[in-house]
Image 1: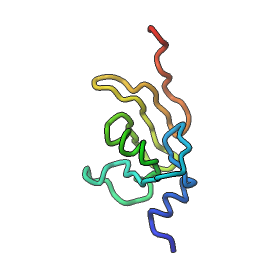
Image 2 (image 1 turned 90 degrees about the horizontal axis):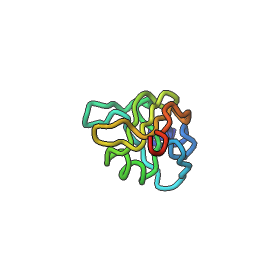
Image 3 (image 1 turned 180 degrees about the vertical axis):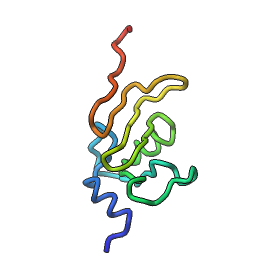
Image 4 (image 1 turned 90 degrees about the vertical axis):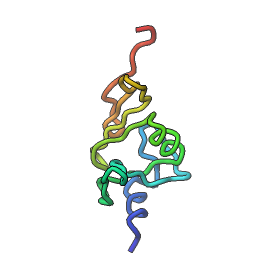
Length: 103
């Protein structure tokens, strides 16, 4: 029987789940609610992300992921201090478009 990490990778098609990323390399298992913040090990709290998005995006607070995996995740990309994300997705569906240039 595959371990829980394998089940998450398999469920997510062995592909990073960050919208627009199709990486199949250097995949990590991300806890949507960090374990340090009380997040559990249930499969709805875990998703597959590539190393770059995990470390350089999520843990650098440039990307935020909320909700329940696999189909109920809200992704906020381009986080800025005190501002709205540049773009938001529910799964791969765009829910907030970036502002128009100059406006």
